[in-house]
Length: 294
Image (cartoon, rainbow, N blue to C red; front, side):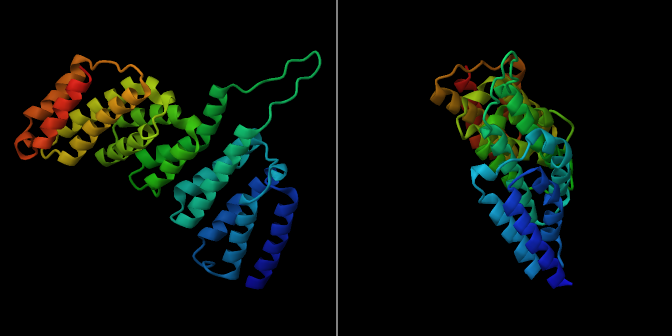
């Protein structure tokens, strides 16, 4: 049976090399990913053959990249998104993410359609392209931040933030929205970590979201301080995010909006909390944030 599967996969590999990274290739990706995730084929000839197919696919030259993004977005991408959300196999999950990255890169690098006589060509605006690319990953982010039993890892989103700068503004908008929702504090802190990662790139495109970031931090700090045993680590990371935003704005020479009275009160309350005596660094961080935004 194993030999039969390997022969079938030999045919698939030849087919993929012939047709390239096309819509037909996208159609078979979910099945290949399921084989990688299957515990019965790990380290078997079948497993190695599937990895070989993916390796060939990721190494394809531009003339072999013919997939139609809009078509795949409607048919194949949802299946891959569901696979990523449900699988516990990190290798298979990583291959799935790499496939989506490849699809997005092809879309972003696609040449503009030539103008036809007496007819205006439809040009994809940067905003439209960003929205389309972000839609590939937004369901995965939602599962990560709202599903208590999520199988996602934050490093997956670090890759998205790093490799696809075009999605960072939408990413920040969504993450801050999730922080303001009724989700677990642990998930909110994961979201803070993601925002810290975005800011580490000093990207001007996310600067316009500064009020949303500060508002989300204020909302989270309020929730943390209301706990009977507030976590000093959680408070510390929130204040550090505020300082990171200030640092990035200074580096980019961009204006920073002052804190409103509600946000100031929340940050000042850190100095008045029971933790102030035990953790003097929290008091110092709170004062530093207030002085930076004064």
